[in-house]
Length: 247
Image (cartoon, rainbow, N blue to C red; front, side, top):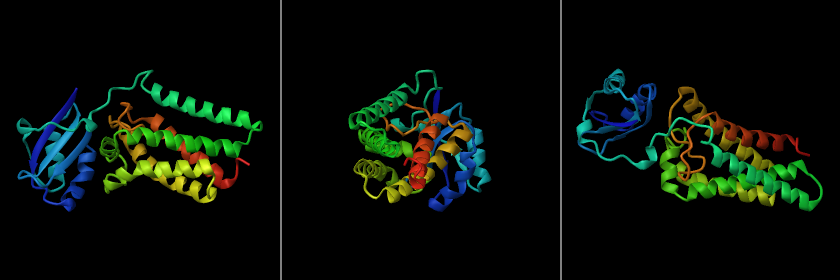
């Protein structure tokens, strides 16, 4: 069951938050935490499953600060930090179905042209992939940005990156479909997806039960190795394009 805890702290600035971050990130079962330095109590709000107030307070103390349990005064938390359920056999059905649809559309395009060109098929698949994923993110841009910053290393430091990320995907989609500057676009994709995968790898290794933002907030997909495979697929295709393996 998802739990919400709140602590009064003496974390006064971004430097304080940065100092306590590695300690809080190591506490088991935390799915999300944030500090509101604008409040009188410098409130630390923590979400997770089976949370221990003592372990959280101890983590803050290890960083050289204090934390006092103030859970009785906890306000309602955003829906975007809702913990996900343990994955089942049908959890990833939306993701797999979308992948099958994209593959089917690309196959039909190649069939209509009459000749199979692997490089062209890869570009069209990547274009359709980025367009579809951007669409779901833009259905709830704010919710996506809040979920994305829970694990992405760039969005976690610069929240505005989560807001523009779907538009980066849209730009990549347009570039792949139109075939503009393939080398530059493949290189950009390789860099963007590689950076994105770092946060995914960290979350998977830490076994954090948080929502994957790959399809925005439309589906409650858990962060897992499936998410890593998704990023790895785009990285692999971009690398193949750079090396000319599709020709």
